[in-house]
Length: 434
Image 1 (cartoon, rainbow, N blue to C red):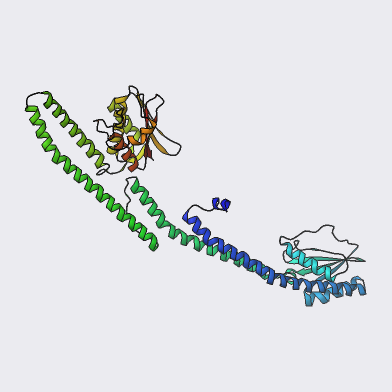
Image 2: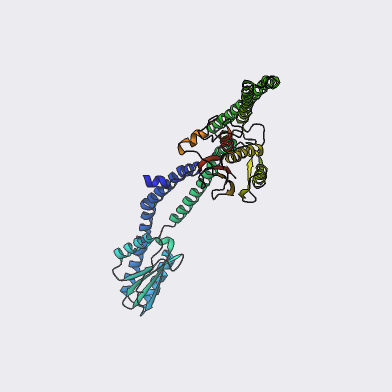
Protein backbone atom coordinates (compact mmCIF):
# COMPACT_ATOMS: atom_id res chain seq x y z
CA UNK A 1 0.00 0.00 0.00
CA UNK A 2 2.86 2.36 0.85
CA UNK A 3 4.54 1.68 -2.49
CA UNK A 4 1.30 2.34 -4.36
CA UNK A 5 0.82 5.62 -2.53
CA UNK A 6 4.24 6.81 -3.67
CA UNK A 7 3.28 6.29 -7.32
CA UNK A 8 -0.08 8.03 -7.04
CA UNK A 9 -0.37 11.40 -8.86
CA UNK A 10 0.25 14.41 -6.65
CA UNK A 11 -1.85 16.96 -8.56
CA UNK A 12 -5.64 17.27 -8.41
CA UNK A 13 -5.81 16.81 -12.18
CA UNK A 14 -3.78 13.59 -12.04
CA UNK A 15 -5.77 12.13 -9.16
CA UNK A 16 -9.14 13.00 -10.67
CA UNK A 17 -8.03 11.55 -13.99
CA UNK A 18 -6.91 8.35 -12.26
CA UNK A 19 -10.25 8.12 -10.42
CA UNK A 20 -12.10 8.19 -13.76
CA UNK A 21 -9.70 6.36 -16.08
CA UNK A 22 -8.83 3.42 -13.80
CA UNK A 23 -12.46 2.25 -13.35
CA UNK A 24 -13.05 2.63 -17.11
CA UNK A 25 -9.94 0.56 -17.88
CA UNK A 26 -10.93 -2.13 -15.37
CA UNK A 27 -14.45 -2.26 -16.78
CA UNK A 28 -13.15 -2.57 -20.36
CA UNK A 29 -10.75 -5.35 -19.38
CA UNK A 30 -13.50 -7.28 -17.59
CA UNK A 31 -15.91 -6.83 -20.53
CA UNK A 32 -13.26 -7.91 -23.04
CA UNK A 33 -12.37 -10.96 -20.95
CA UNK A 34 -16.00 -12.00 -20.60
CA UNK A 35 -16.60 -11.46 -24.32
CA UNK A 36 -13.61 -13.53 -25.42
CA UNK A 37 -14.17 -16.23 -22.84
CA UNK A 38 -17.94 -16.63 -23.15
CA UNK A 39 -18.76 -15.61 -26.73
CA UNK A 40 -15.87 -15.17 -29.11
CA UNK A 41 -14.00 -18.27 -27.96
CA UNK A 42 -17.14 -20.37 -28.29
CA UNK A 43 -17.96 -19.11 -31.78
CA UNK A 44 -14.35 -19.54 -32.95
CA UNK A 45 -14.22 -23.08 -31.56
CA UNK A 46 -17.45 -23.93 -33.41
CA UNK A 47 -16.13 -22.53 -36.71
CA UNK A 48 -12.81 -24.32 -36.31
CA UNK A 49 -14.61 -27.61 -35.60
CA UNK A 50 -16.69 -27.18 -38.76
CA UNK A 51 -13.66 -26.54 -41.00
CA UNK A 52 -11.71 -29.38 -39.36
CA UNK A 53 -14.62 -31.76 -40.03
CA UNK A 54 -14.76 -30.71 -43.68
CA UNK A 55 -11.00 -31.26 -44.06
CA UNK A 56 -11.32 -34.69 -42.42
CA UNK A 57 -14.20 -35.56 -44.81
CA UNK A 58 -12.20 -34.39 -47.82
CA UNK A 59 -9.21 -36.44 -46.73
CA UNK A 60 -11.35 -39.58 -46.37
CA UNK A 61 -12.94 -39.01 -49.80
CA UNK A 62 -9.51 -38.69 -51.35
CA UNK A 63 -8.22 -41.82 -49.61
CA UNK A 64 -11.02 -43.86 -51.18
CA UNK A 65 -9.37 -43.27 -54.60
CA UNK A 66 -5.98 -41.60 -54.06
CA UNK A 67 -5.35 -39.89 -57.38
CA UNK A 68 -5.05 -36.42 -58.84
CA UNK A 69 -8.45 -36.82 -60.53
CA UNK A 70 -10.02 -37.57 -57.16
CA UNK A 71 -8.34 -34.55 -55.62
CA UNK A 72 -9.77 -32.35 -58.38
CA UNK A 73 -13.25 -33.77 -57.80
CA UNK A 74 -13.02 -33.05 -54.06
CA UNK A 75 -11.76 -29.52 -54.81
CA UNK A 76 -14.65 -28.86 -57.19
CA UNK A 77 -17.16 -30.08 -54.63
CA UNK A 78 -15.76 -28.16 -51.63
CA UNK A 79 -14.73 -24.96 -53.41
CA UNK A 80 -18.25 -24.22 -54.67
CA UNK A 81 -20.30 -25.01 -51.60
CA UNK A 82 -17.86 -24.69 -48.69
CA UNK A 83 -15.27 -22.18 -50.03
CA UNK A 84 -12.51 -24.66 -49.28
CA UNK A 85 -9.77 -25.11 -51.93
CA UNK A 86 -7.97 -28.49 -52.19
CA UNK A 87 -4.76 -29.32 -54.06
CA UNK A 88 -2.60 -32.47 -54.14
CA UNK A 89 1.15 -31.99 -54.28
CA UNK A 90 2.91 -35.26 -54.88
CA UNK A 91 6.18 -36.08 -53.15
CA UNK A 92 5.77 -33.04 -50.89
CA UNK A 93 6.34 -33.15 -47.10
CA UNK A 94 5.04 -31.17 -44.16
CA UNK A 95 7.21 -28.22 -42.98
CA UNK A 96 9.20 -29.01 -39.82
CA UNK A 97 8.39 -25.74 -38.03
CA UNK A 98 5.25 -23.73 -37.35
CA UNK A 99 4.66 -20.00 -36.97
CA UNK A 100 2.38 -18.88 -34.16
CA UNK A 101 -0.13 -16.07 -34.53
CA UNK A 102 -0.10 -12.94 -32.36
CA UNK A 103 -3.26 -14.23 -30.66
CA UNK A 104 -2.07 -17.73 -29.70
CA UNK A 105 -5.63 -18.70 -28.72
CA UNK A 106 -6.47 -18.88 -32.43
CA UNK A 107 -3.78 -21.48 -33.09
CA UNK A 108 -4.68 -23.48 -30.00
CA UNK A 109 -8.35 -23.60 -30.98
CA UNK A 110 -7.63 -24.74 -34.54
CA UNK A 111 -5.02 -27.30 -33.43
CA UNK A 112 -7.45 -28.82 -30.96
CA UNK A 113 -10.15 -29.12 -33.63
CA UNK A 114 -7.75 -30.73 -36.14
CA UNK A 115 -6.39 -33.14 -33.54
CA UNK A 116 -9.90 -34.33 -32.72
CA UNK A 117 -11.00 -34.93 -36.33
CA UNK A 118 -7.89 -35.78 -38.38
CA UNK A 119 -5.87 -38.91 -37.68
CA UNK A 120 -3.06 -38.15 -40.14
CA UNK A 121 -0.15 -35.72 -39.55
CA UNK A 122 -1.07 -32.13 -40.36
CA UNK A 123 0.43 -28.64 -40.39
CA UNK A 124 -1.17 -25.22 -40.58
CA UNK A 125 -0.16 -21.54 -40.74
CA UNK A 126 -2.48 -18.70 -39.73
CA UNK A 127 0.02 -15.92 -40.46
CA UNK A 128 1.13 -16.41 -44.08
CA UNK A 129 -1.98 -14.98 -45.76
CA UNK A 130 -3.98 -12.04 -44.35
CA UNK A 131 -7.41 -13.41 -45.34
CA UNK A 132 -6.85 -17.18 -45.59
CA UNK A 133 -5.61 -20.11 -43.50
CA UNK A 134 -3.10 -22.61 -44.93
CA UNK A 135 -3.79 -26.18 -43.70
CA UNK A 136 -1.84 -29.22 -44.94
CA UNK A 137 -2.49 -32.93 -44.36
CA UNK A 138 0.04 -35.66 -45.09
CA UNK A 139 -1.15 -38.53 -47.34
CA UNK A 140 0.68 -41.48 -48.86
CA UNK A 141 1.20 -39.76 -52.24
CA UNK A 142 2.35 -36.41 -50.76
CA UNK A 143 0.48 -33.52 -49.10
CA UNK A 144 -3.07 -32.26 -49.47
CA UNK A 145 -3.16 -28.45 -49.39
CA UNK A 146 -6.31 -26.82 -48.01
CA UNK A 147 -6.88 -23.06 -48.26
CA UNK A 148 -9.81 -21.79 -46.14
CA UNK A 149 -11.10 -18.22 -45.72
CA UNK A 150 -10.11 -16.79 -42.35
CA UNK A 151 -13.69 -15.89 -41.44
CA UNK A 152 -14.63 -19.57 -41.82
CA UNK A 153 -12.13 -20.52 -39.10
CA UNK A 154 -12.17 -17.57 -36.70
CA UNK A 155 -15.01 -15.22 -35.69
CA UNK A 156 -14.25 -11.85 -37.35
CA UNK A 157 -16.42 -9.88 -34.94
CA UNK A 158 -13.86 -10.17 -32.15
CA UNK A 159 -11.44 -7.71 -33.70
CA UNK A 160 -14.26 -5.31 -34.52
CA UNK A 161 -15.39 -5.49 -30.92
CA UNK A 162 -11.87 -4.79 -29.66
CA UNK A 163 -11.54 -1.86 -32.08
CA UNK A 164 -14.74 -0.19 -30.89
CA UNK A 165 -13.86 -0.97 -27.29
CA UNK A 166 -10.55 0.86 -27.67
CA UNK A 167 -12.19 3.75 -29.52
CA UNK A 168 -14.83 4.07 -26.80
CA UNK A 169 -12.11 4.07 -24.14
CA UNK A 170 -10.16 6.80 -25.95
CA UNK A 171 -13.31 8.87 -26.42
CA UNK A 172 -14.33 8.57 -22.76
CA UNK A 173 -10.77 9.37 -21.68
CA UNK A 174 -10.72 12.50 -23.85
CA UNK A 175 -14.05 13.65 -22.43
CA UNK A 176 -12.77 12.98 -18.91
CA UNK A 177 -9.57 14.94 -19.52
CA UNK A 178 -11.48 17.95 -20.88
CA UNK A 179 -13.92 17.81 -17.96
CA UNK A 180 -11.19 17.53 -15.32
CA UNK A 181 -9.16 20.34 -16.92
CA UNK A 182 -12.23 22.55 -16.79
CA UNK A 183 -12.68 21.75 -13.10
CA UNK A 184 -9.01 22.04 -12.13
CA UNK A 185 -8.36 25.34 -13.94
CA UNK A 186 -10.31 27.52 -11.42
CA UNK A 187 -8.42 25.89 -8.54
CA UNK A 188 -5.11 26.64 -10.27
CA UNK A 189 -6.15 30.26 -10.79
CA UNK A 190 -7.13 30.49 -7.11
CA UNK A 191 -3.73 29.10 -6.07
CA UNK A 192 -1.90 31.55 -8.35
CA UNK A 193 -3.94 34.47 -7.01
CA UNK A 194 -3.23 33.45 -3.40
CA UNK A 195 0.49 33.11 -4.18
CA UNK A 196 0.57 36.51 -5.88
CA UNK A 197 -1.22 38.15 -2.96
CA UNK A 198 1.14 36.45 -0.51
CA UNK A 199 4.08 37.98 -2.41
CA UNK A 200 2.49 41.42 -2.39
CA UNK A 201 1.62 41.41 -6.10
CA UNK A 202 -1.55 42.41 -7.90
CA UNK A 203 -3.94 39.47 -8.49
CA UNK A 204 -5.34 41.05 -11.67
CA UNK A 205 -8.97 40.47 -12.64
CA UNK A 206 -9.38 37.29 -10.62
CA UNK A 207 -13.03 36.24 -10.33
CA UNK A 208 -14.67 33.18 -8.73
CA UNK A 209 -15.33 30.50 -11.36
CA UNK A 210 -15.81 26.74 -11.50
CA UNK A 211 -17.85 24.46 -9.27
CA UNK A 212 -19.86 25.79 -6.34
CA UNK A 213 -17.25 24.72 -3.76
CA UNK A 214 -14.44 26.35 -5.74
CA UNK A 215 -16.48 29.54 -6.11
CA UNK A 216 -17.05 29.59 -2.35
CA UNK A 217 -13.33 29.18 -1.69
CA UNK A 218 -12.48 31.90 -4.23
CA UNK A 219 -15.03 34.29 -2.74
CA UNK A 220 -13.72 33.56 0.76
CA UNK A 221 -10.20 34.37 -0.48
CA UNK A 222 -11.37 37.68 -1.99
CA UNK A 223 -13.20 38.58 1.24
CA UNK A 224 -10.11 37.72 3.29
CA UNK A 225 -7.94 39.81 0.95
CA UNK A 226 -10.26 42.80 1.34
CA UNK A 227 -10.22 42.48 5.14
CA UNK A 228 -6.41 42.27 5.20
CA UNK A 229 -6.00 45.26 2.89
CA UNK A 230 -8.52 47.26 4.89
CA UNK A 231 -6.74 46.34 8.13
CA UNK A 232 -3.37 47.40 6.71
CA UNK A 233 -4.81 50.67 5.43
CA UNK A 234 -6.52 51.43 8.74
CA UNK A 235 -3.36 50.59 10.67
CA UNK A 236 -1.25 52.80 8.44
CA UNK A 237 -3.65 55.75 8.66
CA UNK A 238 -4.03 55.35 12.41
CA UNK A 239 -0.31 55.23 13.08
CA UNK A 240 0.35 58.07 10.65
CA UNK A 241 -2.22 60.13 12.55
CA UNK A 242 -0.73 59.17 15.90
CA UNK A 243 2.74 60.05 14.67
CA UNK A 244 1.55 63.39 13.35
CA UNK A 245 -0.34 64.19 16.55
CA UNK A 246 2.63 63.30 18.75
CA UNK A 247 5.14 65.23 16.69
CA UNK A 248 3.50 68.58 17.55
CA UNK A 249 3.84 68.31 21.34
CA UNK A 250 7.28 66.71 20.92
CA UNK A 251 8.39 69.67 18.81
CA UNK A 252 7.06 72.12 21.39
CA UNK A 253 8.86 70.25 24.16
CA UNK A 254 12.11 70.22 22.16
CA UNK A 255 11.76 73.96 21.57
CA UNK A 256 11.00 74.54 25.25
CA UNK A 257 14.06 72.59 26.42
CA UNK A 258 16.24 74.18 23.75
CA UNK A 259 15.31 77.66 25.03
CA UNK A 260 15.62 76.66 28.65
CA UNK A 261 18.76 76.93 30.69
CA UNK A 262 21.28 74.22 29.80
CA UNK A 263 21.40 71.91 32.75
CA UNK A 264 22.04 68.23 33.15
CA UNK A 265 18.31 67.56 33.53
CA UNK A 266 17.32 69.52 30.42
CA UNK A 267 20.04 67.83 28.36
CA UNK A 268 18.79 64.39 29.49
CA UNK A 269 15.18 65.35 28.76
CA UNK A 270 16.16 66.61 25.30
CA UNK A 271 17.97 63.32 24.60
CA UNK A 272 14.85 61.41 25.62
CA UNK A 273 12.78 63.48 23.21
CA UNK A 274 15.18 62.64 20.37
CA UNK A 275 14.85 58.95 21.22
CA UNK A 276 11.07 59.27 21.24
CA UNK A 277 11.15 60.81 17.77
CA UNK A 278 13.36 57.96 16.53
CA UNK A 279 10.99 55.41 18.02
CA UNK A 280 8.02 57.08 16.33
CA UNK A 281 9.79 57.04 12.95
CA UNK A 282 10.83 53.41 13.34
CA UNK A 283 7.43 52.27 14.51
CA UNK A 284 5.74 54.09 11.64
CA UNK A 285 8.07 52.45 9.11
CA UNK A 286 7.39 49.04 10.61
CA UNK A 287 3.62 49.55 10.67
CA UNK A 288 3.41 50.95 7.14
CA UNK A 289 5.21 47.93 5.71
CA UNK A 290 4.65 47.84 1.95
CA UNK A 291 1.52 49.93 1.77
CA UNK A 292 1.23 52.52 -0.97
CA UNK A 293 3.96 51.20 -3.29
CA UNK A 294 3.35 49.22 -6.48
CA UNK A 295 5.21 46.05 -7.43
CA UNK A 296 7.44 46.43 -10.48
CA UNK A 297 10.12 44.41 -12.22
CA UNK A 298 13.36 45.90 -10.90
CA UNK A 299 16.99 45.62 -11.94
CA UNK A 300 18.34 44.28 -8.66
CA UNK A 301 21.96 44.48 -9.82
CA UNK A 302 21.65 48.24 -10.37
CA UNK A 303 19.69 48.76 -7.14
CA UNK A 304 22.24 46.85 -5.03
CA UNK A 305 25.21 48.56 -6.68
CA UNK A 306 23.71 51.98 -6.01
CA UNK A 307 22.86 50.99 -2.43
CA UNK A 308 26.42 49.79 -1.76
CA UNK A 309 27.92 52.97 -3.20
CA UNK A 310 25.51 55.15 -1.23
CA UNK A 311 26.30 53.25 1.99
CA UNK A 312 30.04 53.50 1.38
CA UNK A 313 30.37 49.71 1.15
CA UNK A 314 33.61 48.76 -0.66
CA UNK A 315 33.52 44.94 -0.60
CA UNK A 316 30.62 43.73 -2.71
CA UNK A 317 30.15 41.19 -5.49
CA UNK A 318 26.92 41.37 -7.48
CA UNK A 319 25.98 39.12 -10.39
CA UNK A 320 24.88 41.27 -13.35
CA UNK A 321 21.38 41.27 -14.84
CA UNK A 322 19.57 40.18 -11.66
CA UNK A 323 15.87 41.10 -11.74
CA UNK A 324 12.88 40.54 -9.45
CA UNK A 325 9.30 41.74 -8.97
CA UNK A 326 9.54 43.93 -5.87
CA UNK A 327 8.52 47.21 -4.31
CA UNK A 328 11.87 48.99 -4.73
CA UNK A 329 11.47 51.47 -1.88
CA UNK A 330 10.57 48.80 0.68
CA UNK A 331 13.38 46.45 -0.36
CA UNK A 332 15.89 49.30 -0.46
CA UNK A 333 14.90 50.34 3.09
CA UNK A 334 15.16 46.75 4.38
CA UNK A 335 18.59 46.14 2.82
CA UNK A 336 19.82 49.53 4.00
CA UNK A 337 18.87 48.58 7.55
CA UNK A 338 20.82 45.32 7.24
CA UNK A 339 23.90 47.06 5.79
CA UNK A 340 23.89 49.84 8.37
CA UNK A 341 23.40 47.32 11.15
CA UNK A 342 26.39 45.33 9.90
CA UNK A 343 28.53 48.49 9.59
CA UNK A 344 27.60 49.58 13.09
CA UNK A 345 28.83 46.36 14.72
CA UNK A 346 31.53 45.15 12.35
CA UNK A 347 34.67 46.60 10.81
CA UNK A 348 34.66 44.45 7.63
CA UNK A 349 31.31 44.22 5.83
CA UNK A 350 30.80 42.24 2.61
CA UNK A 351 27.80 41.94 0.31
CA UNK A 352 27.24 39.18 -2.26
CA UNK A 353 24.21 38.80 -4.57
CA UNK A 354 23.66 35.87 -6.90
CA UNK A 355 21.01 33.54 -8.33
CA UNK A 356 20.85 30.16 -6.61
CA UNK A 357 20.15 26.85 -8.32
CA UNK A 358 16.55 27.00 -7.06
CA UNK A 359 16.00 30.27 -9.02
CA UNK A 360 16.15 32.19 -5.78
CA UNK A 361 17.82 35.60 -5.54
CA UNK A 362 20.11 35.55 -2.50
CA UNK A 363 21.59 38.75 -1.06
CA UNK A 364 24.18 37.86 1.59
CA UNK A 365 25.55 40.45 4.01
CA UNK A 366 28.47 39.38 6.23
CA UNK A 367 30.27 41.24 8.99
CA UNK A 368 33.01 40.46 11.53
CA UNK A 369 31.19 41.85 14.55
CA UNK A 370 30.15 40.05 17.75
CA UNK A 371 27.28 38.22 15.98
CA UNK A 372 24.19 36.76 17.63
CA UNK A 373 23.98 33.60 19.70
CA UNK A 374 22.06 30.76 18.06
CA UNK A 375 19.47 30.80 20.83
CA UNK A 376 18.77 34.51 20.25
CA UNK A 377 18.34 34.46 16.45
CA UNK A 378 14.56 33.96 16.45
CA UNK A 379 14.11 36.53 19.22
CA UNK A 380 16.13 39.06 17.21
CA UNK A 381 13.32 39.32 14.65
CA UNK A 382 10.75 40.43 17.24
CA UNK A 383 9.83 44.15 17.10
CA UNK A 384 11.54 46.44 19.63
CA UNK A 385 13.80 43.67 20.91
CA UNK A 386 17.31 44.71 21.95
CA UNK A 387 19.81 41.93 22.47
CA UNK A 388 22.70 42.18 24.90
CA UNK A 389 25.11 42.94 22.08
CA UNK A 390 22.69 45.46 20.61
CA UNK A 391 22.17 43.45 17.41
CA UNK A 392 18.80 43.39 15.70
CA UNK A 393 18.06 47.09 16.13
CA UNK A 394 17.55 49.52 13.28
CA UNK A 395 19.88 52.34 12.43
CA UNK A 396 18.21 54.67 14.88
CA UNK A 397 18.41 52.16 17.66
CA UNK A 398 14.82 51.25 18.45
CA UNK A 399 15.02 47.52 17.64
CA UNK A 400 13.03 47.43 14.40
CA UNK A 401 15.65 46.92 11.65
CA UNK A 402 15.50 43.13 11.47
CA UNK A 403 11.73 43.14 11.96
CA UNK A 404 11.22 45.47 9.02
CA UNK A 405 13.66 43.49 6.84
CA UNK A 406 12.04 40.14 7.64
CA UNK A 407 8.55 41.54 7.14
CA UNK A 408 9.59 42.96 3.77
CA UNK A 409 11.13 39.67 2.61
CA UNK A 410 8.08 37.62 3.62
CA UNK A 411 5.61 39.99 1.97
CA UNK A 412 7.57 39.51 -1.27
CA UNK A 413 7.35 35.71 -0.94
CA UNK A 414 10.94 35.54 0.31
CA UNK A 415 12.72 34.96 3.59
CA UNK A 416 15.37 36.52 5.82
CA UNK A 417 17.63 34.15 7.74
CA UNK A 418 20.50 34.77 10.14
CA UNK A 419 23.52 32.55 10.77
CA UNK A 420 27.19 32.66 11.73
CA UNK A 421 29.35 34.46 9.14
CA UNK A 422 32.69 33.00 7.99
CA UNK A 423 34.40 36.06 9.56
CA UNK A 424 32.85 35.14 12.91
CA UNK A 425 30.17 37.80 12.92
CA UNK A 426 26.61 37.76 11.59
CA UNK A 427 25.47 36.63 8.15
CA UNK A 428 22.08 37.91 6.93
CA UNK A 429 20.63 36.11 3.87
CA UNK A 430 17.86 38.12 2.23
CA UNK A 431 16.14 35.77 -0.28
CA UNK A 432 13.65 36.77 -2.96
CA UNK A 433 11.84 34.67 -5.61
CA UNK A 434 12.58 35.60 -9.20
